[in-house]
Length: 144
Image (cartoon, rainbow, N blue to C red; front, top):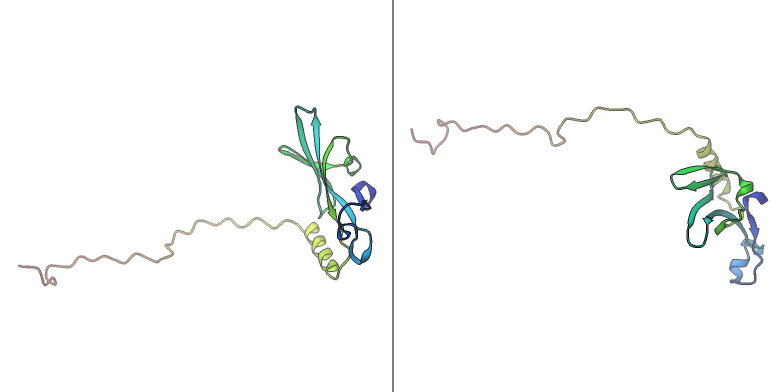
């Protein structure tokens, strides 16, 4: 990740050694994943969220009902209120497969709309049995 993506290396003195060291004894590296912005004063204001999409690697701004792409150089913002980081994972044997799946997902066209079909009007239980009225000739209880 470039510096505009908000990468940061952990070098603080608090936390356990597993928090400070990544895999293989290397320093842990954290990438900025999202930011909550507060615009306004202490008594009131408005919140916006910025988040990086892991598939297309672009930043997006979420502001009420509006979502739009956001310039990465503007993510580090003076109105930042809460910052969320993800711990970077060093490569593993699954990386080629994950990269392939991500690339396939990002470059694929959306699936086509399903075909429109008319509602099925057949009864899944089959036709109703015919009800027959007994005739008086075959009814043993009949008196004629």
